[in-house]
Length: 180
Image (cartoon, rainbow, N blue to C red; front, side, top):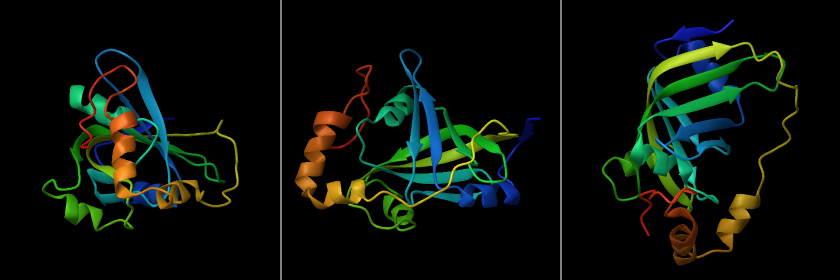
């Protein structure tokens, strides 16, 4: 049975911190809906209505483009271990890039990563939990080292060139606001 809350409760925070991955969901007023898996040490719960995550370079940049058009976002955590639960946090988000006011303060909460593309500062206005009974049990092995190897083989200029080539617009052709 789904339950709704106006904020992230302490039990929710603990659940979030136990998960090795989360998903983001966003959409513009038209076009495709985007759902992206996120991992690594890239998310922090800063309060009952605030979550931030450092978005690392990826093959697309849909969330940023969608938020520029329609400021709404959903974050979802799903337990793959013995405690079945799904938790969704609904809200809006502010996008920060390196050099923006507040970037240094928030970036300091994460391990340094040269491919950090944005920080999303999410204001949560609704939390919903549901059972997750149909979610399979899976065993966590480890983080992948693929991202770090990719970054280690690139200069800062190479990463910015990648952003320019692959991350400046959504798959629907909308701007993402990524600096290049």
